[in-house]
Length: 170
Ligand SMILES: CC(C)(COP(=O)(O)OP(=O)(O)OC[C@H]1O[C@@H](n2cnc3c(N)ncnc32)[C@H](O)[C@@H]1OP(=O)(O)O)[C@@H](O)C(=O)NCCC(=O)NCCS
Image (cartoon, rainbow, N blue to C red; front, top):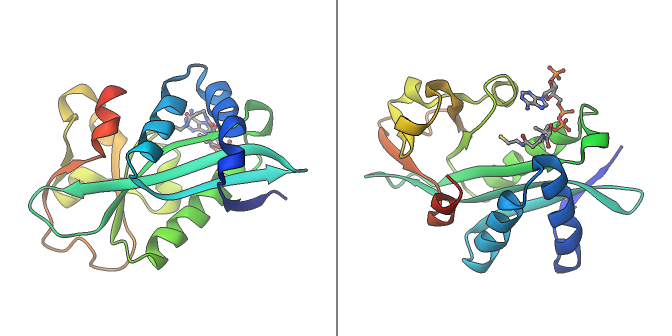
């Protein structure tokens, strides 16, 4: 089983390699660095197997217009191709979501695979009356929200925004 732990500066190069291999392009690794530089990171974890970084997940500051809800944006997450489908992504997501809850966050947004994130409790954001700022560019149900505690989004509606650094990627 991998160890899931916080990322440290000495992991940064390994993390870039993991993300680039998983996505087959440098854009998401560039985004991670931009989020660190912009001090937008809430939680960043690595999965380590035999002292090597094999997975990474990051949560950054997000918001919902007109609301004080404390919202985290999940992205990116990556597991080295040869380590995928072994539950490492699940461990990273669960640990990261627990950490967001313990830091007092109310909800997490994600733009991603509709058959992956519901296993963690994510639901289509449209069920909450929440839309992505990129709604016209994405598949409708790919934008999802997780309430970290019951009723966290009661009365909250509107446009959800990832940190500005994401606009470079989209
Ligand atoms: C998505 C990712 C992080 C999952 O990590 P993982 O360690 O393989 O995940 P787990 O082993 O916990 O879960 C495996 C499940 O993820 C599903 N999955 C993996 N990649 C998927 C994809 N592109 N679309 C939908 N589901 C995917 C598998 O089908 C499997 O489903 P099952 O449990 O129903 O069989 C990993 O596949 C990855 O790095 N992919 C490339 C980068 C990426 O797409 N990141 C997410 C951006 S939204």
